[in-house]
Length: 500
Image (cartoon, rainbow, N blue to C red; front, top):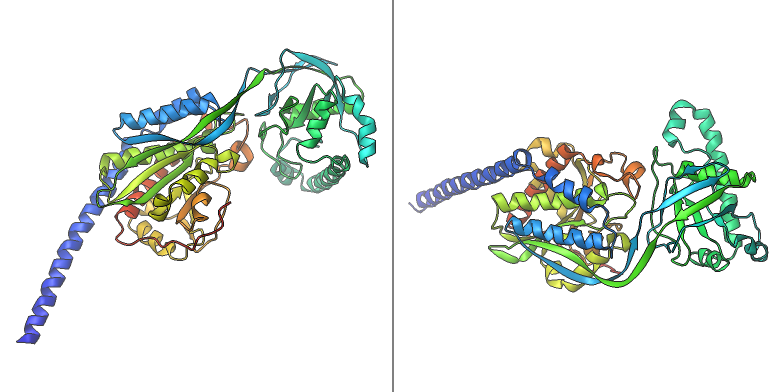
């Protein structure tokens, strides 16, 4: 009799489990279906992208434009009924550029493509002068003997590229010529680097010394280096070496033109009108949107992307696309899953381009969120479909991702590979959390020639966004956030790492 009762209890338990499991599966399927409808049929990505990328545009840390973006994000979240706050993480030196005109006035007249480097000194009024090239010197004394020649002149400081075609063109159409060109390019780079090193002035010291000697401005090529070839019309644009002398980045083609004219004594003259000013220290912020957890409010799922950008273009893929992804995922979750089990935060960082400043400050100031972190999902490499997720050295995380991804529609996940266990990596905002031992993961996307055409370039504009991919990414991210919030288990943390 006892045996019969035992089996009856087991049978009853099994029936109860099946019923509960069926109810749970039905609920999960319902939520996933609702997420899909919101992501694909009711997408808001385009209407969010257009004002952010076109109207607000570039979002340089410390600029009024970034503050405008902060305010815009907060207003959008409030319009959706989502709790949002801005949180100061520090200050930054504010810099504002005006409209810039760079013209070749001799030996012929031609407007040049280029830009005043961010955080560079500007011109109070238009200045004009001849161009000379950086000399081939072998010692500091030779450099000092040459230095007076720079007064009242523009100095072409970079070595010109031998070609502005992408390397892939050479490899495809003239592989034998490519090998020859590459060898000559490498030799030229070594000689030029040796000459710079011979001055005895490294880092900011060299441009500072040139400015003190009376240079009107420094001209540099906006190719990233002589060993990495970007695409057509693409220029990598970062910050100036010093704020004491105007530093102008010219496109590869136009820099080569000006330098060749100077090398062959054909009298190039540049006219530069580039107003810019420093405006002192200003507060800088992270923007935090929140869906408060209903059962475990002190455990967190964090959606992460940096809002700041360089100002050479509009910051569309670095990192407007990541910003839009986090916003759209939060909109979807608020519509279909407004009372998550764990608290879901979307944090839009400032100062990523200056060294992960916003995310590092947040992680150091919010130990409760770091300790309670279930998972952080970061995105920061362009507009393409998400295809790879590294476990960042968290050996126990792979099982969670495999379980979450297995429950999603196959068309979302079939191209995704898990790098398990992967390794702890720096370079973007998830590193501000992994160094504390908190489980933070970067969502890698298809490149769409990100490094070549849009990363830190003058071509990072609205037209580079791929909206079908962004919609799919928003669907995937909303589902990841849902499963991470609902999971009965905690993603394991690591021992405290070295946070610098």
